[in-house]
Image 1 (cartoon, rainbow, N blue to C red):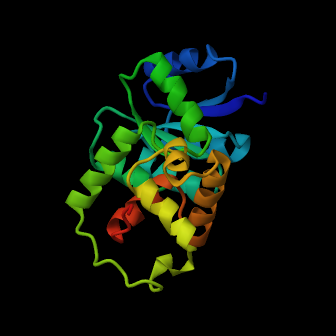
Image 2: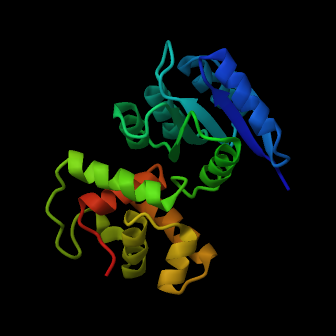
Image 3: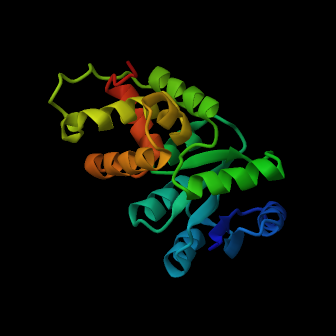
Length: 220
């Protein structure tokens, strides 16, 4: 099996080395580079083309939010952001910029490894419960526009089935949960999510979830 290639971007050397040690303990993960600031993270992402960048949100020269926007905007890699607090302006900014998920710095080793595997696979945020909390916070902090009429707005490009899947994504469900609820194969769900992102011009599953909430798209 091809290992997940990870670039670690963290300005605190001790923290960065600890993360690298944990990642290297997994046989399916390969650390391909280390960056001490946002500028270096973007440069190395362009040069190394990792599968995932583990990105601290608060770094010198270029902050993690701006670095995330460049990495995802250029399609260089998935981004998993590291933060001290579970909900702050940096987390919101990074997710808006296209990060696939976030992880608290005090998470244990198994949680870190699971998060890397999950986000690298395009599954979005680590745990559905966390996804639901995050989406609820977005909905609370930014007023949502009125739901568009059927057949209008950005969602008009989606098929009825894709709208169903988008609604479940917006509710914070994982691919496995969506497959069970809609009685579909998990691989089919992944295909639908990929098509939704492409049609709507979104960078991540998290952005799709936010759009579902903002547009009033909810599960029946």
